[in-house]
Length: 348
Image (cartoon, rainbow, N blue to C red; front, side):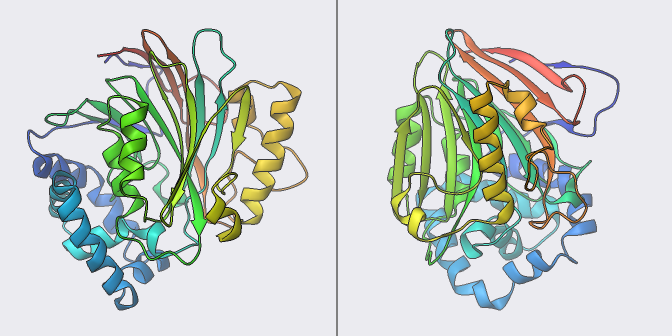
């Protein structure tokens, strides 16, 4: 896997997360985000609510199921807690936040293009808590017995719920779906982490189908050497998979998940971004221009406002061309200018 850093200094960092075991990997990941977590999370109302007694029963249920179904990921979370110097209960609960609360600060916009002659393209805005600007990073992982991968990482969180790509050529871009009435068995972020171990699309979808009772997520999925581009919406026991054609936009609410269409929260930002992105797709704009757009009548696609109503800002943008030989990628950390990092990863 090759990488080129473009320019001298970047707002979005790049870290190699070392570890020969899941626990060691988690510990290294925790240490990388420890300072930012202790600076910001204890005073965050989201963190206080999620780690409070009201959710203890649901957290305990999901912890038990994670230990049973995904023991290596559980060990990674144990190490994460050690590296963060937080309790395991707090760390795990924070990684269940979208399963516990329908309204959490996880937005994002994805452009999915199946119309490329040399393979599909996935482009993604990673929108998250503004106080993590400058402390988020691209993590480089080499887990034992699974493909190496790279993922956008937030301090305090396991990878697999943002944008990522692995050595098998699998690309994943993730959007929040704010499902209501969920009583989850497995955290959606654990499922996202599990998908990063998949060697192809069918294996990735099978992981989700076997563990669908979670909070809501949308995955844009593609894999080098496979012509398909999948839009996968899942949660509350249902997995909806659509093979896309043409160019499509996805803000963070369900578009084809039957339960989600009836039981979800669509914030003003999410609705406005979907309308604006659909319009710009229809005009034929390129994906990067769409994801950097701040126009339109409603709230913008590119999010930099201090008073964003969903408490989110755009912290990174990824463009992934999934070709027969591997993934050609660029990651941006600014609203203008060239990519901070770029490279070509040959399929392993």
